[in-house]
Image (cartoon, rainbow, N blue to C red; front, side, top):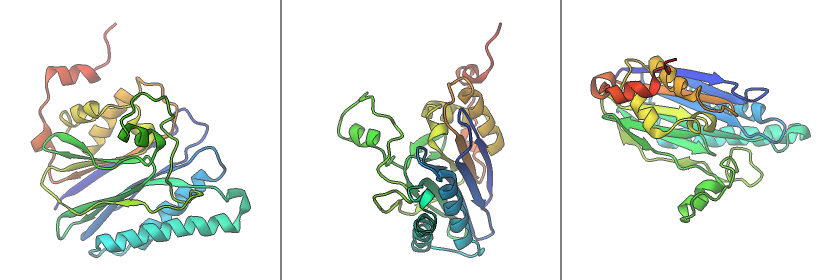
Length: 258
């Protein structure tokens, strides 16, 4: 099963970049992730680094692994943040989001874990599915039927290392199809794009690098106030099932004329 991927991480409108991307391709398994250190308290970047490094290290052997194993790896990563908090009181409240995609290449299965408001999108036959639900107060209000509440979208009730300890969310395994694509991204990335723009961009490209670059064109037209990071993952040949370019799609991304 062919897998190709590309990643990007940019500082955006912040003074520093607390986002991290990670990838662990292999013959039997693969892992792709983003972490976004929670702003407002010292050490967000350190929490993101701890989780990223520990998770990739736990899964480093190129062999098949199960959803149970990856869940244990995420839990160990969260414990590593707790241990680091106790060692250095300056960083006693540091925390990070996580969105991680896991792939069993032998069984052609995918599943994911997330905490916070970093997201995973799944694209199949050219259509988009947001497969994670934000652990945010804004999402809770939306689920309760309230729209346009004015609540800051980055007020989180769950993150790895957060004061109130909660489990990350875990998906069931998904049987992969040739042409599946995934976008693993932090909130700074998805807040500057609509799902339609992600979908349109996928219709127009032939590689994950091109996909990220085309989405970046749309992002650059927005007021980028946060770090923005993403990993694009293609399974098989998405361009053969999504290359449905239309004039209206093209117009969205072409630079305006003078």
